[in-house]
Image: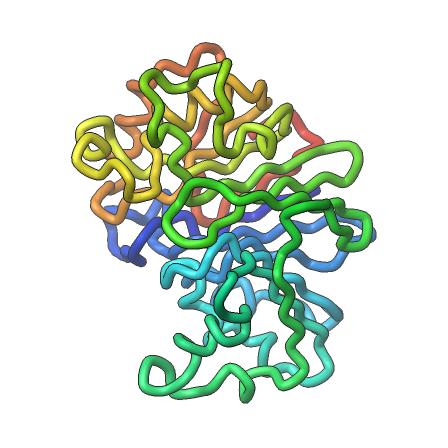
Length: 281
């Protein structure tokens, strides 16, 4: 499996010279695997550049949304493949007990918030509620989704091709309600999705000081991400959902200061490519 980061920022797109290395676009990750359709994790502002880069021979795209907060869907209306006739596109999102996925996405992709309605973007678009009770297949890929701690219906993903495994937990607060995180004897949100993964992409939005006044907002500190990764015994951790107030220098300093405990940790950077079969980052 090969991964490319198209958007690594959290909450709000933040372009400028201070964010050029880690990137200013919101969440979007491309996943390619032999025998599988093109998989896109979240549709933040980074999906626009991804869409512009795709060759004409792509026949199917599956977009897996972790949740429907604006920074994770704001790029959908600018995703060029949605305007390409004959291209098969599926969007998967967390289930709701009140509204269908189409009804929820239409709240944004319709006037007055957006000038073009969802039905006019891609009339043949197929939408799915992500099953959270059993895995599903996307060609050669086996996808497991589970609800995780974040405001509103939110899922994390575990994707494997039988040889390598990616875990994607972009907006996640596993320490919520924990006296001393992690507590091995207790259930931990996202732990099963991350267990033994070759690469864990995980929320690391806050500093310890920022988190202290934002408990319950649905995000992690870098320290929480590392502790979860170590508990899950992952091979590599890519910190993600960088706070819009954190410039490149700040992220560098946070990564340098964190106690890694021998874990391979790096900050996800826009434009970065990873081959999960390789031990190199």
